[in-house]
Each structure stands twice: as C-alpha cells, then as structure tokens.
Image 1 (spheres, helix red, strand yellow):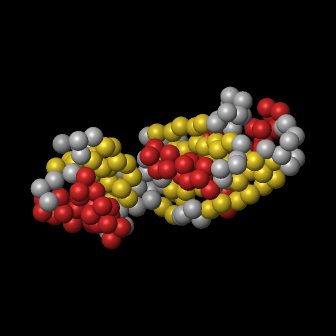
Image 2 (cartoon, helix red, strand yellow):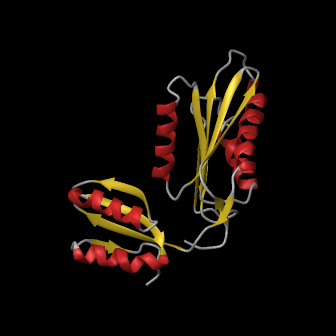
Image 3 (tube, one colour):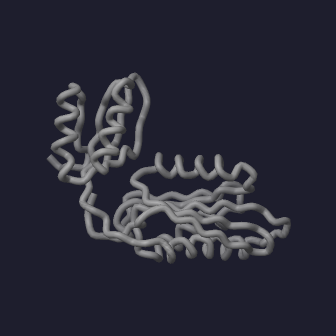
Length: 204
C-alpha cells in the first residue's frame, strides 16, 4: 500500500436530529470490505431498533481509490450511500468508512431531504475526526489451519498489524496488513509454523 495520504486517526461518532429523525454517523479507518461489514454488523447489534444503517467507504489513495462501495439499506436509491460517498470523496481521505444509523422520527424527509441529511451526517464526522498520514503497510496473505487462527490474531495485536480479512474453507486464508518493519517477524512466525504466505501486491 502506498504512503502519504490522510486517513482517519480513529473511530468517532456524532449524532444529529432532523425533523425528529436521529442520524448517528460513525467513521473508522478500514483496510478491506470485511472490516466494513463488521462495522455494519456492530451498528445493527448496538442499534437493533434503527430503521436503516447506510454506509460508504473508500480504500486507497483519494482521487484514485483502489476500492469503493456504498449501500442505501432500503432508503430510496441514491439518497443515502451516494451522498455519504460523495462527501468522503470531497474530503481527501482514504482507507475510510462512514456508517449512518437512522431512527425514523415519523416525518418523511423526501428524496432531497434525505440526501441533505445523510450528506450532513457524513460531513459531521469527516470534519471532526483527527487525521494521520497512512504508514507504509505491507499486504501479506497467509494460509493456515483453523487451530492457528487465534495465535496469528494474537501475533497481529502484538505487532500493530491488522488481520483485515479472513476467508474460511478447508483452512483459513487471512489477509494481514502490517508495518514494513514487522514483515520479517511475520515471516518467522509463518516459517516456524510451516505456513504458506505470499505478497499479492508485489511485482516480482
């Protein structure tokens, strides 16, 4: 992953109320879609009575993002996810997810009102969150048996690494983002446990 663009410094939540509807906006740094899905699931777990949980994210360099997506979660098409993503794209920030939880207050806002509400909610957290410059991170994909998943996750906690995605089949295929100085230690962990690993973003 390339260095040198702003990312959120951490998690932040802000709430606004528009015509009795509550809009709870959350922002967090992310490296992959699995993290976004986990944040959405967490939002539903913490707000099971919410009407909608809408979101958008982009990963990579702002202006030329490697990946971006959005979701209206039942709101009229184009009135929630797209406004959130538009605000993200205007904020010059990468590796970012914004989730907006809505409690319906009984008054319909109309398409234009929804666009303004979701854009405003996204703006509130994007403007308030601290920024930091992303560090050079290496992407390593490790294949391992189920028994070693927790030891690898524990290793990640100790080395400031992010086990961003895990795919489960006969075993686990885990995508790990980690600071470049920690790569040698991960290689030692893999070789000590006879695990296969590769660097998908490297040009050989």
